[in-house]
Image (cartoon, rainbow, N blue to C red; front, top):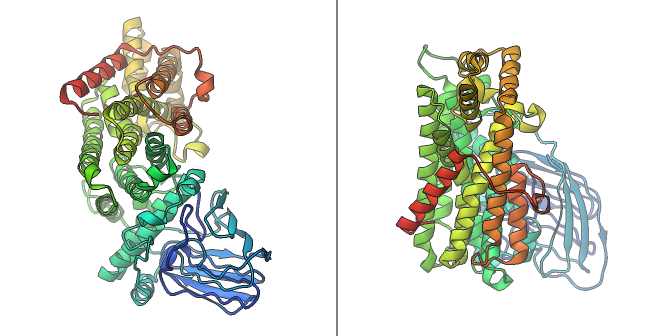
Length: 579
């Protein structure tokens, strides 16, 4: 995932938090501990060393090398050289919320490189004359629970340094409203959300470690790393661009930018909860190409199943970790600086989102237990367990934060309903036919688990209508078999192709995407053009279809089961006056 280095994208200069200093006699040297609660010092323009409190810290000097150690949530080491240009004085704090204080003879132009996971090029801008272009490529490793034994040291540092909110600064709960540069966030939404997450999670991990060192090390730290080290930040991006589409002016968006980033962090934490619990419920051992939380915990602690019906220690710990992520998500949203006239609507949407997610997970379990093969039920399950909380609700949350009129919120909600279903149907296809190197999980997991997916339901329906007994025998024998062999999985895939189920689902995804775009472009939507195009790009990306321009001329036809579910949702919204 995109990783931020020192300056949270979109932050204007603020009163520094923490206790870091950087001496720069005549050379403009600086040290920044990532996002503000670490301690860092520089001995001058040659070498420097900083210690971060719990989250990856970075420090750099204009010349020389620097090593920074972050405990519990990762370690980054950078070596950077930068050129200084002296066009004017620079006597104020560096842009961002990190504990950096710089004195020098001129403004600096930094080009730093640190090792981070996915390469991410961005420019963080602010009113200062210093512009940093960061290239991050993470070489830090987090092998899993138990690999970071220094949570107690992190807690001591955080207690001694403290975290406070200066004017427009960031406190323990997240990003201050006045600190956000909307244009800079526009340039890197993922980076800004990651920076906001670090601010919040630093305090949360320290708090957990203060309660108990083992809990901080084995549960809180890995949860925070999971949030920071993976994922596409799709939900936060949808929320942000919906807010911007409803508040296209920078001034209007600035009023709620801090709240938007904080709620976006809440969405990432809620997603973490869902994935940790999902891996336990489905027995998944791999997530994002790495051992799932419960698998990593068992490997670190020698977890074994304590009886035929008893969970392993890792499975129990993963349930608690998911609960902790959900608690942090609620805390983040509750602390968001939302305008009073919008707070009630935001709470309502957040409550709906959580309830819909739980209902969808239950329908998933119920469908497995009852071997449900009804397409309409499969559509409803797909919407609730993923589509609504992944796409529809983030868009509506953005509209609520912007104070959008009902017609605009309704258009975003309808678009998200269609796009969210397309997203989950694409996920079902990826499970059956996708490349594990791209999906980060073994293929065929839904087939082995007997998931009530729309893809499988359509295959059963079409095989039944065609009287294809051989296809029905394969589906009956293989769907829900946890020990399914690779050759049997290949046979299921052939049936999904031969019955036309794959083709039907692909066509439905295309039709749903066209419908979503029509809702976004409708005359009553009233969305800002630039931000609307960003949403359109996200919609087509999550659906796995060509760009918005590539959908021109495509029809909006969908399967009768999908059409019926969409019509029912629209009718319910009309009757209840909801989105």
